Length: 162
Image (cartoon, rainbow, N blue to C red; front, side, top):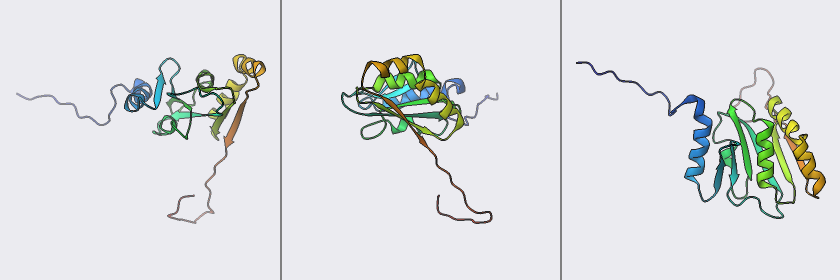
C-alpha cells in the first residue's frame, strides 16, 4: 500500500497570509519590544508613543525580511509599515503608523527611492487627517528620501559591495 506524501518547499502556511503571519511571528518572538497592529498591518515599538521623541517610520514591500519590521526597536525605527510581497504599503498604513508613534516632537518618514514607496508616503502625508494633526500642534511630519545607487562602469567586476 503506497502512502501519498507532500514535499514541503517553503515555510509558508498560506501564501496569501505570509506577511500577516510573519509580522505576528515577529511580534510574538519579541513581545517585550514590539506590538503588531493587525488591522493596519504595522509593527510598532511597544513603548510608543514616547513623549518628546522624534519618531522614525519606514516601510516598503515585504519579501526582503527582516527589512522594515526587523528594524523596529530601541535606537532604531519606531514603526514599520510593510506592504504585501514586493508591493508598497498603502497610505493608510503610514497614517496609522504615524499616529501610533507621534509623541509630539514630530515624525520622520524614511522612504526608499522606489516609485511606489515615494508615491504612497507622499499621499499619506497629504491626507486630511495628517494635515489636520499638523495644524493642531507644533509637531510636524518630515519625509527623508533615501537615494541609493550602485553603479559601476561597464565591464568592471568587484567583490566589494557598493
